Amino acid sequence: MTTIRDREAALYMQAGRRMPITVVRGAGTRVWDDEGREYLDFVAGIATNTLGHADPELADVIAAQARRLVHTSNLVYSLPQIELAELLIAHSCADRVFFVNSGAEANETALKLARKWGKIHRDGAHVVICAENAFHGRTLATIAATGNPRYSDPFTPLPAGFAHVPYDDLDALKAATGDETVAVMLEPLQGEGGINVPSPGYLRAVRAWCDEQGLLLILDEVQSGMGRTGTLWAYEQEGIEPDILTSAKALGGGVPVGAALAREHAAVFEPGDHGNTFGGSVLATAAAAHVVRRLVEGGVLEAGRARGEQLGRSLESLADRAPGVVGVRGRGLLRGLELERDVAPDVVAAALDAGLILNAVRPNVLRFMPPLTVTDEEIERAVSLAEQAVAAAL
Image 1 (cartoon, rainbow, N blue to C red):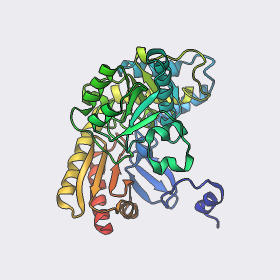
Image 2 (cartoon, rainbow, N blue to C red; image 1 turned 120 degrees about the horizontal axis):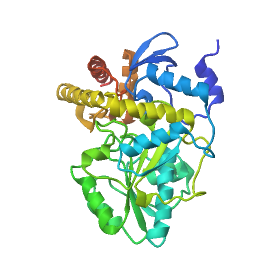
Image 3 (cartoon, rainbow, N blue to C red; image 1 turned 120 degrees about the vertical axis):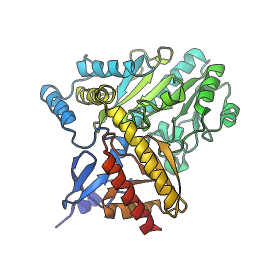
Image 4 (tube, one colour; image 1 turned 60 degrees about the horizontal axis):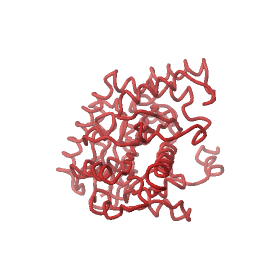
């Protein structure tokens, strides 16, 4: 019989690589394939399944909203959209929000805000300084912002208006600033770039530089936000506030939704400046509002913080005892295990065979990003399986 993999290979544009399993069901941190085999999922939809798989409360919210209304449009008002906006504004430094469908779209929205702000306030300045090893999305503008030839070379020429400097290098950022600079766009810690955490004080110094030069600071919290690093937003741990903030991934708990948030002075859109068909749909915003409420009112954020500390300790212990492991990176439930050799894909394959889903974010870095509802037993089991996989690959 023709398998689902054969069917996919005959139909789908081969733009990525899949693990050799077909997932058909999930519950919490666990998923099952079409042969009935169980796995611990420490990828969580790429840091997206905030409440785990098939959370009953979230499923009830989605079903109830779908029975009332699945989609209308932004030509009319909708209550779920306003409720989510109120929650995000109440629990961030922002004053305004614009809803989209993904992290790339949220970052595109932030870039458009910066461009228009530059026309109004900086004589048309439009260049955005970004970091090397960043990741801001897969659209033409966001791969230009990302600045990684691995993503961008097949699609040149790219939109102009981006400069790139080493991450965590304030002097390089200052040297790159010029009359055409309008903003600095950074991840509070780099996810796809290898779980890179900046030096203490770096983001505070960037904020001070932006203030001194009259620039906007845009923080891409698509991966680091929504409790992933121990606080609702990673910027809270740095004692700063961005002018523009982006969110997606975990915001909807698995339902596609994104948001660009801005403080009042940076919220320069006027009617007709931006829009989309599905952004802020009633289904997506009803789901996201439930996720945010569970984070800030239902104890999920506190539980996730505790589990993040546990994951950090467990991985540090693994690094201390396991040959071939040289260190641990990250914060909260976004951790990277650094290997001395470029065997991370082999470790991922060995872990999958053992019943653990991991991700190789770099040839020598494994990424751990389970749901925020992961249990302490599941963390210990996952680290044990990862240790076995490392030993098998090395």
